[in-house]
Length: 224
Ligand SMILES: Nc1ncnc2c1ncn2[C@@H]1O[C@H](COP(=O)(O)OP(=O)(O)OP(=O)(O)O)[C@@H](O)[C@H]1O
Image (cartoon, rainbow, N blue to C red; front, side, top):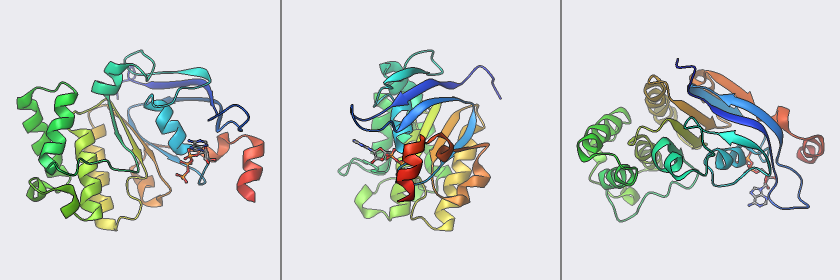
């Protein structure tokens, strides 16, 4: 493991609007290469944390430092270093699976030779070679989920964020996804997975129980 690569959360706090309770309150954590699974009750802030790590939201206090040494809002980090698969897959409906991958990689500035090589690699590892010419809508839910993961992996980002990547998927789809993610982190990359799915626990190098970080009033809210 390369100890110099990490994604650091230093005492971050976040709430959506003044007057609303803090969703994340003085949270400190260093994400290292490997898979970190974030688990916790619905509404405890897992997706919010992923959005902060992606730079789509900004902490109200504290800071997040990416492996590039920047804030997550840095365009180079977002474009080159970050891959994410959120709950809405957002595959381009009029582009084939292969074209979805090629567009994502070319937006990240990957050279065309590498795009082809990476596409073959990740489509293969995710069991999608025979579907590469298909439009997303012609795929099953599990195939679409795997295509969205392949699209995030094709630029071989240093940080990959996945929000509930296996929710509603059967064991076979889940095994294919976990095995591809293991290949991904074998190259000293950071993979952060938010999930309720206990099948993913064996994939994780670290499990972060987000319930622990809930402020007291939100613990009480979660009980009613
Ligand atoms: N845009 C928003 N504006 C205001 N509050 C929000 C917004 N998005 C989320 N929240 C609130 O922030 C809290 C954390 O939501 P978040 O989606 O991060 O939880 P989660 O742990 O990912 O939940 P789940 O497991 O159900 O997806 C919840 O109380 C939610 O209602």
